[in-house]
Length: 165
View (cartoon, rainbow, N blue to C red):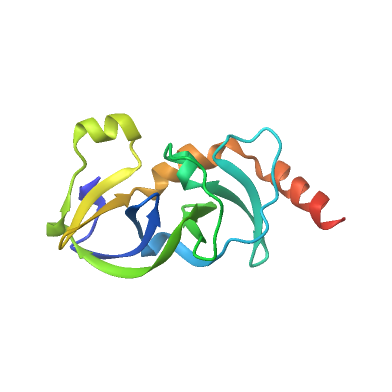
């Protein structure tokens, strides 16, 4: 909720299906290009698989699918945003990410009840930046709902099978 946001917070802004979203920069460990993703059997449709990122096996969540948008091919602009909230780390596959902004709390409104009812509780607020609207994500909710469908032992086994070939 907006109460958890500070007076002015910094965000990594990214594009997804023509809409701008924001992730608190304190939750972002790093960003990288989307490279090889190893599929994991029986994972939810929005869990594309796992990636090997900076020595760690990380589940890769396609936010397009997670949010109900159609899947799109990755491009040179596509990015994998590695986020960590508490003990959980996941990679978020997005269309593009290249902006870092500070957003003050007076520019942020709570999401309307009709929006949170349809999209779940992963929306922390809606920021207005000039003529631009930015949907701010509650990463603990995105990770708790999206990252729970893949167990790390299964992910590590799938990655090991791919790297042994």
